[in-house]
Each structure stands twice: as C-alpha cells, then as structure tokens.
Amino acid sequence: MGNSFSGIPDNSIVDSISAVYKLQMPDAIFEKLSAFIYREFGIKMPPVKKVMLQSRLQRRLRELQMNSYEQYCDFVFSKEGEAMELVHMIDVVTTNKTDFFREPAHFDFMQQVVLPEFVHKNKKNPLLKIWSAGCSSGEEVYTLAIVLSEFARNQQELDFSILGTDISSAILRKAFDAVYTESRVANIPMELKKRYFLRSRDREKPSVRVVPELRKKTHYARLNFMDENYDIRENFDVIFCRNVLIYFDRVTQQNVINRLCRSLKTGGYFFLGHSESITSMNVPLVQLKPTVFMKV
Ligand SMILES: C[S@@+](CC[C@H](N)C(=O)[O-])C[C@H]1O[C@@H](n2cnc3c(N)ncnc32)[C@H](O)[C@@H]1O
Image (tube, rainbow, N blue to C red; front, top):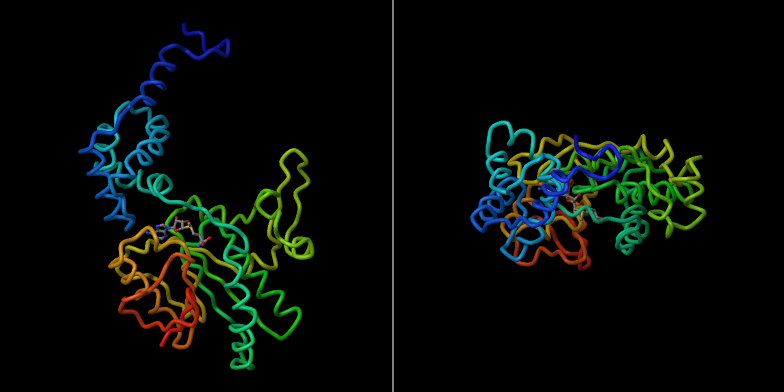
C-alpha cells in the first residue's frame, strides 16, 4: 500500500506529476494543435506561443491523467475528444482578462452622447439594446447596466436589455452568476456599489453579487466568432466588441466585424478595444473617435 493515507503522496503520483512538469511539447504536436486552435477559434498561435501553450496544457494533461502531449493530441483529434475537449481547450487558449469600468472613456461617451441621443430619438419606445460580444465574466455587461441605470435614474426614461456572448461556457456561467470578489469591485465608487451590489454574509470569503434588478436586464449565449452565421435575431443599437479581435488575424477581424454589423442598426454605435482598429478594412463603419464607430 502507498503512503498517501498519511498525507504524504504516493511516490508513483509524485513521479508522474514531475514527469508531466518536465514534458516538452514536440514541434510537430505544437503545429497540429496551433493549426486546430486557429481553425476552430480564430486565435493566432505563432511559434513564440509554444511555451505558453505547453505550460497551460500541463494542467489538462494532469486532469486527464495523460503523460505525453502526443497522447493528448490523439485524444483531441478523436471523435470523443473533439466533442469533449473543445470546451476545455478554449479556456486554456483564451485570455479572459476584463474589469469593471475598463477603458472608462467609452462609458463617458455612452453617457454623454449615445444615451441622450437615443432617448431624444426614441421617446415612444426608449428600449436600448446592447450586445457585449466577447463579454468574458460579465464585468463589461454589468458596467453598462450600471451606467444605463444611472442615466435613467438621474435624467430621462430609459429601458435597456444587454446580451453577453462568449465562446467559453465556463466564463459565461460566471457572468450569469454575477458573483465577484470584493477586490474585483474595489475601484467602483461606494455609492454605486451600495446601489448595485449585494454583499455576501460569508466573512471568510467576502464577495458581492449584482442586484437582481440589473441581472434581469441581461441575458447570455455561447457564440463562436468563427461561425459563418451568428444565430442572433435581435437588432442592436450598440455593440461592444473590445479586446477580443487582437487575437485574430486581419482577415478574420474584418469578417467578424462584418458579421457583427449585420446585427447593428444603421446609425448604431460600435466600440473596439484600445489597441484595435478598422484601418484599411472593408466594413460598414465610420470612425467617430479612435475606438468608437458608427454604422453607415
Ligand atoms: C480579454 S476578454 C475581453 C473581455 C471584455 N470584452 C473586455 O474588454 O474587458 C476576451 C474574451 O473573448 C473571448 N473569445 C476568444 N475567442 C473567441 C471566439 N472565437 N469567439 C467568441 N469569443 C471569443 C474569450 O473567451 C474572452 O472571454
């Protein structure tokens, strides 16, 4: 019998864990996996990313109790693996970095330009529809919900509905749950925190949850930007697609923007992340500010 009962891991487990740590991903396997990732998710994986992919996949190998990348690759390309592993692989290769009030100039623009114009033009039916495409764990969605609610509270009648989509089911679950650690909301002004978040009673793990009044104005769906057609039936006034396209090449970026624009009303607003642009792309957008556009 091994000695794991005493709290000291069995030697064979220690050996297999350290073997996985020492594993090198063969170049041929990296090429196969990176081509697959590009095809399925549109995400560029140049050779400089090999070390990153290797280290991020180590956990998957341990979880699947596999001891080589070849074995993992065979699994990914098998019928069973293709169905089961895709959802995990996307969490390995994507970056979900996000924040409340990230790139705040966009929310100022919403408050100062988009919202006053919208209520002025839609006095009879002031229902604003927004799509947060690549929404990660929901911080962008709830920041928008807070900004819109504040506008409605302080100024004029406005109702809204926000769709959040992402490729990762795990991250969408977090967005839907709307539970965040205290540190994630630390920079939100206290007045807004009191109005829009509920505190957990658990003192050990202090967390907050977005109030139901905001949550009920949001809905979520899984969507892969690589799909030829997005199964989205709504027509939006505003689309946020920030800090997602940087992972794609130019042709893919242009295709994605064109597909998103199919669901944007003429005269609707389109927001990109700070390091993204539409320079020399054939898309139905005119630039208003460096990362703010209008559909024409
Ligand atoms: C860095 S986060 C950006 C979150 C938010 N928009 C922001 O700016 O804070 C990028 C998100 O894009 C998603 N993503 C990556 N590839 C995608 C694809 N092919 N289709 C849909 N979403 C994708 C990732 O899962 C991730 O949650």
